[in-house]
Each structure stands twice: as C-alpha cells, then as structure tokens.
Image (cartoon, rainbow, N blue to C red; front, side):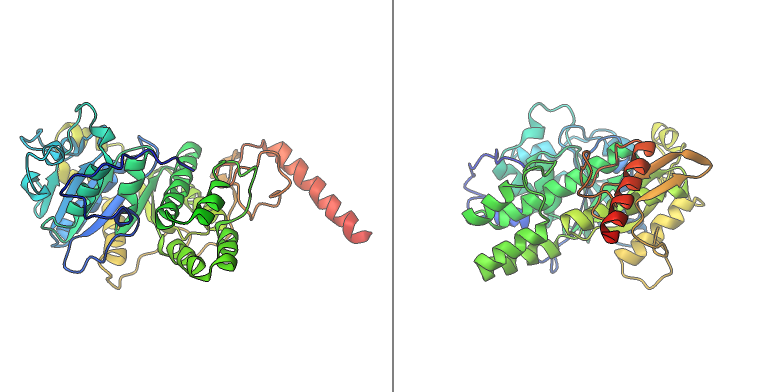
Length: 402
C-alpha cells in the first residue's frame, strides 16, 4: 500500500509515547471525543461539512472545538468569517505555546472555538512524525466535549494517521466517479495503514499485506478476511487481533453536493464495494444537497447562514447529528435504508444514456472482466458490458445443458 517514510526521531517530551497510539485511539473517558473528517480528494466540500457539523453540535449545547488540520491549505477561519489570528497551529508545533488550548479562539458561533491552521507556512504540511504524535495526543486535552478535525486532501501518512486517530471517523465524497474512486482508495490505504501499525513487529502479517500493494490486485485478489484466515491458521492470537482491528474500523460516509436524490445511490455503491472488497463496515449517514448560495455566504462572512434556518440541509444535518452522535431516538431515514441491495447499476432520472456501476464482487462479470478495478466506477462502455453479460449468460446455459 504505502511505504514507511516517517521520521523516527522523537523529542524528549514525546519519547514515552508509542507509535501504536496513532492506530488505536485510547478510550476517551472524560476527555474530548475526537471526530476526524477526510475524503482523499480536494474540492469536495469537506471543510463545509466540518463547519456544519461543528455548528450543529454547538447549537445542541455542547462545547466544540474545530481544528483546521489541513496543513497545506487551512481556510476554516475564512469560512467562519474570521481574520487570521495572532496564534495558530504553527505556534503549537513550533513549541511557542505548550497546549492547543492556548491557540484556540472564539468564533461567531456560540459554543464553538477554532484552532486555526497556518496557510502559506513552508514545510508545515510535512511535519515530523513526533510532531504528528504530539498533536494527536493534545487533541484529546482540549477543553471541549467534541473536537472536530478537518484533515487535508491527499493520502500522505500525515493525513492517514490523523484520520485513524479519531474516535469517530467520517469520509466525505461527491456523487462523481473521481470522488467515489478517491474515497474508496483513501479507505483502503487507511485500513492497511492501521493493520500495518498493529502488526509492525510481525514479519508474517507484513509480508501478507505486501502482496496487496498493487491497486489492481493483479498478484493477489484475496479479500482481507481471507488474509485474516491465513493469519489465524498460523497464529491464533494474531488472527484474533487481525479481525478485531478490522471490525473496529467503522468509518462513516456523508455524501456532499447532491443535485438529485438519485445520486445518493453512488454512496450506496461505495458502501457495497467497501464492504465486499475491504470487508469493512462503511456506515452511510446521509447526504447534503448542493447549495449554490454557499460561495456568497462565505464571501459575505455570514457563517450562521451555512446552515440556513429554514433549509432542508439544516433539518437533515441536525437530524443526522442528533441520531448518530447524540444518540437521540428520532425518526431519521438515511439514503437507501429501504432499498434492496446490492445496487450496482442505475440510470439517472430523465437521462437513460447516463449509467453508473461500481466494480464489486456483486457484479456479474467479476472474475471475467479485463477492466476489473474493485471499488472504482466501471469504465466499460454500456454496450460492451451488456454484450459480455450476454455471452457469460449463454456460456452458463451451455455448461448446465452439458
């Protein structure tokens, strides 16, 4: 999957911290609960989801701190209608302050504080390994009930480790082939990174994971559960830990910028592919409709209007938060809850020429397709797909007849 390139240098302050703390977040207890939000691809509206999530929690009467950990392009302060503060995350990383609380600042939203990133600082996106561990450890020390962390685009070790450190991990995607593909890739890298961390001292497990480095799985098409079975046969203790780690990885999905309800099915397709090919549970929380007024809201510095009082997005988002984060017993129907799965082929409303398929074990051509790319949108033209499907059906009929 990814090569280890992190520096192993530690400061004296961080020497007692183990690397495994990145992969296995500790129990929160009275500490702040950390929510990490990522997506792999840039330009998907992840920052707006983070802002909306934070505001919804604050409006529920909770103490919330929003951390702009987009180390290469921080802009949450702009979204919230604020000027660049005197102290930022850069001051914490450079040890000018001892705690993250010292760089928090109030926002126009009651109950919401912000730890501002430091856009334009050379080298900040490439912080050292011990600096990353220090930041992760201090997130839980913030004076808040919830800490929402906006992670930058990409799949570097910094982004992946920050994502994996959350108590609740959320991925954001758009109903577009490129976004769905990058989101799947991000989840794949994240679970492999977590497994590598957990079994850093096991040569056998590392060797098995190495066989799956090729994104096309040309050399090893086995599922993670099949790899787990092999580990279980060799060492039962390692096998139990492998499946425990796999089952504990349960990210949430929010689909953003949805134009038409039919597009919510792209989220279902991603959910199916993730479950089939990675054997991890991707919980599809819901979606946010495309809102053309957002650029004007940000330009006019009106953060209260990001979730406009009478908008459907506000009602939908608040219900999502109340049900899944606050545990309230409310009626909230997430997309696809009443749909029959698997849903791997569909047409866009009023456009019979537009189709969307996801490459998954459930596809009828799985194992007989030259373009097989698990978890990614199908690249085969519709006419060719139907032709191959017909040939496969005829072949099966002839086999049964024989």
